[in-house]
Length: 263
Image 1 (cartoon, rainbow, N blue to C red):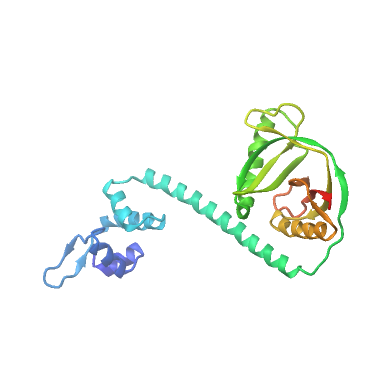
Image 2 (tube, rainbow, N blue to C red; image 1 turned 45 degrees about the horizontal axis):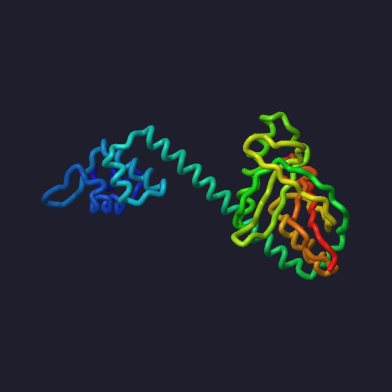
């Protein structure tokens, strides 16, 4: 097969085939001595398919050459594909979270001169959580909280414990944000979880309705209100997830609780 026909069969460009030949990745089956026309065997299509698949998986052409030299099989290629798919899905989720954060920040800018007043200062009760904790980059909180909750849920369900009262706390740390997620749980927590006691506190409280990718806006508005009204922070921010069942989060209800003291 002439190079044009082989390119059409393999759904690549002639230029790309010439490049693969130049670097020794896929050499023609024969080259006419007088015309220098390259000819390929249909059997070489399997090699071309592997090159394209591996390149699309993110490997460099040098890495592709090493893999081909190891004569990788279809089963191994499928394994690499599944791994790459998982990596790309994680990247897409992370990109979506970052985009939502930018959109949220723009909405904050648009609302800079709005002064909401629907907050109440009240005593929130003490609660013990069966929880997990981590210090994370504040910009990546959305990527960590859900997996942390899944971990806690799994441990509590295995122990037959209640999942009635989910909560999370957030506190600024030197190297990120200290995050605690868990469920109200009296007594000793199941293996793999820690007991976190939240004391009773005087707190400014508000309500966030809807998806969590907009909750930063609600928190910023609440923080502005408490500063403008002569309060200062007296503990980690708390979120009590009053209703959090639907997958799209449109009907979620989250109570924001910020422990404070009067200046």
